[in-house]
Structure formats: C-alpha cells, structure tokens
Length: 173
Image (tube, rainbow, N blue to C red; front, side):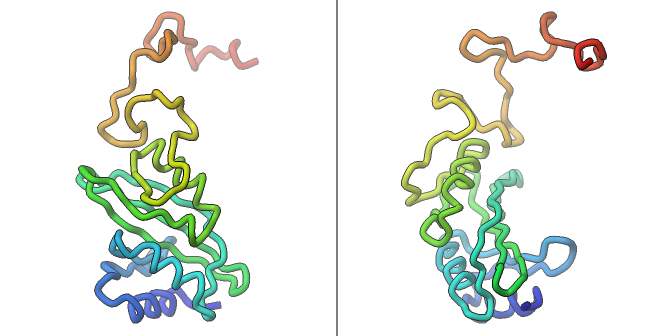
C-alpha cells in the first residue's frame, strides 16, 4: 500500500508542472492537474505497477464560482489504497477530456456530471442526459441555476397550494 505522499510524489515526478496542487491534508488527499492532461495522468495512475489504480469509484462536479471542478475518486484493489484527482475548467468553456478510455466506469459518472453540472467530456461516446429529460434546460447543481416554475405542465414550485406540506405527519404515516 503506497502512502498518499508517495502517490503524489510519483505523479508530480512524472508530470511536473502539470500537477498544479498537492493536498495531503484532511480526509481527501489529492492532486489537482491540468485539465488537458487528465487522461494521461489517469493512465499513469492506472498503469504504474506501484500504484495500480484499477477502479474509478466516482466522478463529481463542483461549482467553484468562475471555475467548475471535476473530482475523481480512485481506488486500487490490488494495492489497497485510494486517492483523489481533480481538474478545473472555466465556467465559460467547461470542456474536459473523457476518461472512459481509462476506466469504463467513467461512462455513466461523466454523463451524470454533464447532466447536473454541464461539463462536456470530450471524446465520450454517448454524452447525453442520464437523470433529467433530454429537453431539460440548465444544470441543477450549478450555483446560478434557476429552478423552473413548471415542466411539461407539472408545477414545480414548492409554494404551490397543492404542494404537500412536509410537516404534515399524516402524509407519511
């Protein structure tokens, strides 16, 4: 099992300035890498014998204001360690290469991140909405998202008089 510092050191040694940050504090040790190099970094983390990150457990999008961040949580069953990789893209052009060629599990993770955050994963073979209807407008997990009044004739406003009161205990008995 490699220590988090060893994983970060190996990644920094291989990619130099493409590793923008190293954070080993807290509960999510990770590196932040240049978005354009994400596939190359992930291939290294998967293929390096000492690291052997054979499993992508999640991809998540985070709205950081002017930037959107993509967080990859990876695991090695063989070496019994985990680590994080982050890449940032500008909000105005949220494009990032797909890592489906590295881990096939990225397929639906990238689709969900696209659907909810609007991050385009270039090279993804089927990048379309996965949770919301195809004609849904906007990306609900962005901080600037405006919740619609209705969709397809269905009221979505919670202050609607027909909307159930969550404090109504009879409703849940």
